[in-house]
Image 1 (cartoon, helix red, strand yellow):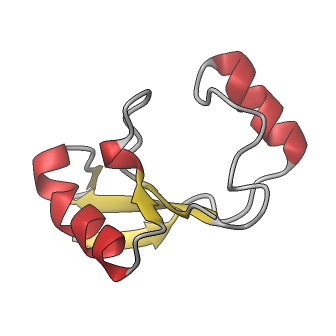
Image 2 (tube, rainbow, N blue to C red):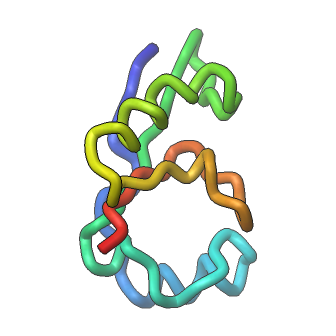
Length: 87
C-alpha cells in the first residue's frame, strides 16, 4: 500500500466549495485549524476506499489518542482518507 498526502491544509474558500458540492457538511472543518489531513491510499495504481482494507489504519490512528477520529467511522459521511484530532 502506498500512502501519500492528499489535502494537508484547506482554506476557508475551498471549504465553502466543498460544502456547496456536498463533499462536506460544515464550514467549520478541522482542516481549517490544521487539525485534520486527508491521505490517499493507493494499491495497484488505484485509490483504495474500502473500509475493510483501511480499517487497520483508522483503528491505529484512533487508538493513539481518544481525541483522534477517523473519517471511515463518521456517522454522517464516509471519508476513509480523513484523519483528525478533535479538540
